[in-house]
Length: 389
Image (cartoon, rainbow, N blue to C red; front, side):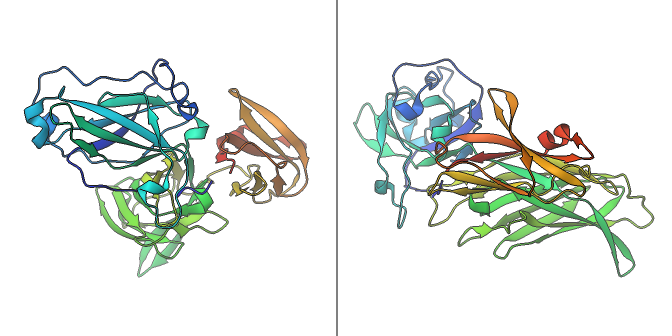
């Protein structure tokens, strides 16, 4: 899937947030089948806050099977008409733009909603879909088109590798490799790294990116490190081992660091650029590591990753070899259960059959057999999510 933001000036703001599931509605276009019921504008007491216009508009991540809500927020200039002074038109497109990524390069379909907010169930076919709304003034008939937003169901896999130590100018540092897999074409444009450590053990932190083009503004205080990074011109592409970079933690003089826990998450990892349709906001897990301990067992294949082929609708899975392993197995989670696809792989790669269904998303795990035993628990913990192109 080539996941290729269109911004238009407007008085209102479209904001999108993930929410809980909802009941089914009536007829909607096929891509939006099983859409949730529409939420009408609140009848609560009108306040200036409802017309503040300060809500930031966002693209969003929503897992398949969950639901998201998009809502039009009115501006101060709308206050004279009241919250019930407007009706709304909603449009969507699952197509990909080309060239300069203009709004009219998409093929838009109208949704059967007229209320201020809508709730929709996420499906695999909607990954990368675009949605926008038009605010219609009941009194004047004036129409205001809001910015296009993109929904994404891809979840990145964040992993912290085994820690190591180094010394410089009399200080001790703990080095932590950071891997980020399951990105679209291994690409990322922006995000904020958030790290929590024991402030009694560490008094400094920095991050070195393994790819060119990413630059960040960072800070460290009271055991919390943040690094807001971006590439202003084009997406950065990670190498085949999915290494994002290395976290470097400075140990306090005399502190005992072995056994100390490191926790990391990346806030709104995003893919954008001239060749991307909309802004794809990945989902992401929280990762942790313990200084001086192996992040995984020796029987779990490391750097498990997927390479998709849009021409033949295939996926190639690749992983590092496990010492002593004589067989590898691939399992897929179907209908809530793990099902083995093959357990007779003798190399560290596997290619699926051709012509899988484009847009389908799967959770996949690879296990190794060492000394006649399969480490299925370790494999499941290291599973990744991939979407067929």
